[in-house]
Length: 419
Image 1 (cartoon, rainbow, N blue to C red):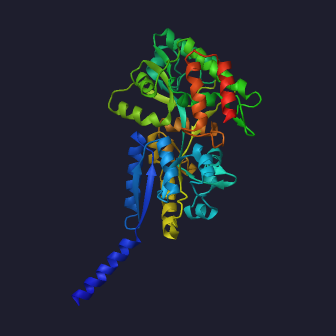
Image 2 (cartoon, rainbow, N blue to C red):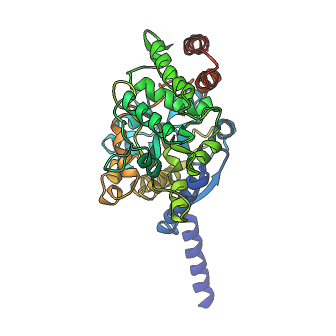
Image 3 (cartoon, rainbow, N blue to C red):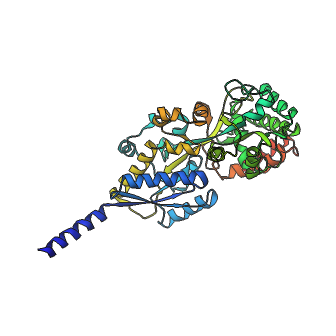
């Protein structure tokens, strides 16, 4: 009898073990992002114990990640789910490395277009099909040191910098900071054209400029709008309002040390600021939407999203698909914690919550979702893509005052269209 009970119990345990679905996961999230995502994964696994378990691996960001994805899909060894930049979706579709998210999938996840900002939804849509579930939007913002702004007489009563509504007003703030003895009124990543693309594209968007129109780069007056953006930034350099030939780590160091009063950087640096402040090693700081330098507010953004690889020759099966959909749905609906990484959750239900409205500086700059612009939809676009590389070559010398903006635009226009 005991033997029969033992056999029955063993069979039950075996069935339970077989019922748990393991979801193989790849991401490119490190630093503060990575810590928070690992915590979310732990929470998911705890909530789905015995049903679904995420087996996560973090790979190197950028070209190495996307090259590995392409190779693994081709040989049928891709993960079940992966993080992806929305800006890379058109290229991924042309390469055949990701699957569409079908109407039935969205219904099963309990998500729909209404749960996302229009620009974010459109960024993962190609030819009327959706290819990813957006997790966040991660724009660039203006970080600022309230103490230095107050010393320069350029701090509003609400604790934000003066002059955010016009070029004239913002340049008055830059000049006042310089006159007050601040070495760098603005810290910018001027040694990396790939990063500065974000600021330049934002300033183009403030003029309703487009990089790509009907398959042509910088068509019509868009070349002039790019030149306008480059000219402003070069003038800031010549007036010694902006740091020159500064790489990413140095830019963050200039701001956190108090040598730069303001900094343009991604929302992903919010954890850095919060951690330093909690340790008592940072001044009174804030972050807000970019200043309006041209006609209206506009800010570059990208989106971390979840995509399902089109794993060559592999039949994922219904159980696996259901598990993957549950992973994407659960993390989307529980992405409030992800906002502590500085990102703006893509799920509008999360950003509309009372809890999110109390998060700072997130709640202050989250209004920029109404003004954000994504990369043009092209296989040449996207993080670490060829369009970034072409423009980067000319952005660095131009921003640092060593190349005429008109000449830079002429070369950029030729090379982009030559692609």
